[in-house]
Image (cartoon, rainbow, N blue to C red):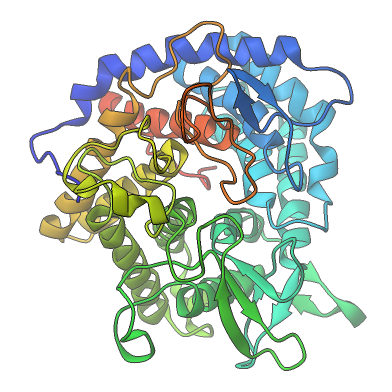
Length: 459
């Protein structure tokens, strides 16, 4: 269980955050220097060098989005130029990619961040450039919303690249693409000019995910543990009925892959923040604000509590809470995570995503006046961030292209590098882990400096 430091303040992390940006700059330059025309997107490192291996090009937005975040944090315009130019040159095909559930990753991290910076006055205002970003985001949201499966109750979900039967926990964070597009007044046009509400699809996907991917320890889930997450939920496409849990990257359908858990934590906390900006009238026909926010909040609290209770004391989880080798790590929840143990790898990328979910949930509850609950999540988020930004996880080797060490991609497929003399993968980085580490650092930097609160939907 995380040993939450109740005395820790964001300002206590200021020097570590500054150090992170210093290290980060060299990593971004190294990756850009190595990029070859037509080469596949960097995904994770092997012996410190980014390599491409994956099912889809789901990490390209993190590559160029990282440069944009670097500019946001430091003001170094060389990174703005890099991120903006590469977005314009190389990201267009992601906007109309009908085969993936990753629009929130690729397009909000690039076009979305650039639009946000212009709206905040961090980069010069240009109406045509802003229109370009907004048109891109509208297209992305609609294309993502079109990837739709209807379930037995008449609602539905955005299905994964596995096909119409497959709901991934990850996809909750792609709701960001629909949210920005809806915010910009866009919708999806269907057959015979049917107007399909992006807001309705956000609500339905969030409800379907909450009902089937998350367990609550009562009623249908009485046999299970509150807050546990199944990576994949499988449906019968003939009649829309739910069939079973599954896991693509975790150990089993009946254990929790911690990065899938982290996506749920961060995704639901972000949606709570976004729904606070949506008018009551829009929400009334979708069940009303009280019901929608109650669902989002109940889910967010369940999964954040599970993370706190099933993660080692320093806030870094092992890759799956049911991984069989954990039985050989006696008392592993009562001490710091050990990236170099002989039985199961840790996953720093899950921690980078989860920390932001904890902080955002804490901030949301504080704004509602629930200071007691808010403190639990906020301080847990700070505790995780302090560990992530320490020298144990920050890659200070100037020849290593990764930023956060000890990240895991796909343990069941054996894609992660095991260094000589080790028994499990360790010492490597992932593009999503590095991006979310930077996003976490920027979030806290703005809190420390009293800057604008960091959201994906700021305009």
